[in-house]
Image (cartoon, rainbow, N blue to C red; front, side, top):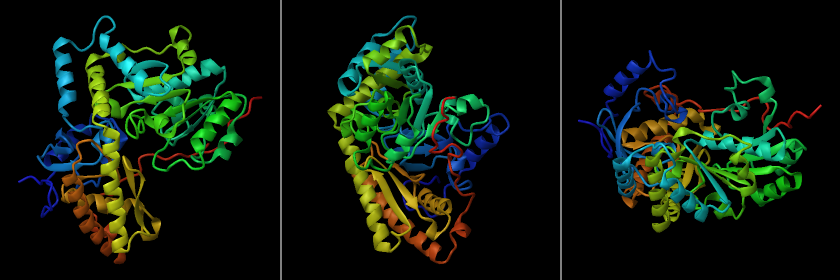
Length: 446
């Protein structure tokens, strides 16, 4: 009988998941379309590899095992799986059509709604993915400033201008690599040292898990203005989650351009670029940024329904409330068990991260142990609490009961130095790492 969300006697049977994986290996390279969803992020041999359906905050794998999900599709499901209001909007639009030969009225409806809630949305462009709009923002920033160089901080997608600073930069010409550099979050001096007269823009995630210190975002905005450099917020994670108006609303800082995806359509593929009208006007003729599926109506209908629900139900406040219970509860348990010196939950309440310190062993092995034991107890977890409107008080209570037991087991394994030996499969891998050119001053013009 498949496992469910309970203290199961054994780990889940994942026979069908493994069969699908074996079918995929000869023809898919790699087997996953998103690194964070791939088998490398889960204990191979314990975790399922393929999911089949979801409802609310719960998912079922292809073997029928049920889990409480804290990944929520790696961010997009701000409301929850199969959320009625959003699904009804999609179904209603499906009856009328998906993609059309001319513009669709929902493009205007969504743009008007975004204009109302996003602080810098003097103008709006609609696309499909986060990488689409971050790359469009870079292109228009270069066109507007007449400059070439980019400073970035965070993850911004798969396109050449960003991947050039990572360990997966093969296939990108050196001339492109020389134009992008990174800086440290909360380190204004690293930005000052990198800015010169050819830096077109600074793009960053307003926060990932660390909070801005000493008015970092406000000071960064002032520094960019002084240098004639555009400030771009990559709000894939912060937008519509920390507040409906995103980080710009929450921190009171208006970026020149801002990019959104994930949270505002509850799982449908759509993204936004918003910004100052004088910059965005370049898209009329000078800068090309168009795509056939930008006006795909099912995603537009989902976005309108999701944003309206978030406003009416005050969803960001709920995400913070539920997430705070988990974050504070985890830290209280770690303190009670005497292991707070090597594991702690950090970040904003709406999206927090469990950390493990090297003082207790290999952090990836520690994470793998906790993940393995949570999966046995019906919780799908990869170190994050990506909160949704469907995470109930009962879900939080159950999770904290599971954490109490699992962290107790972790303490015992650490004390015996048997964490690695306790793993029933291959431990998780690091998703991504930055290498050369990190926090380096851009190459000066000859």
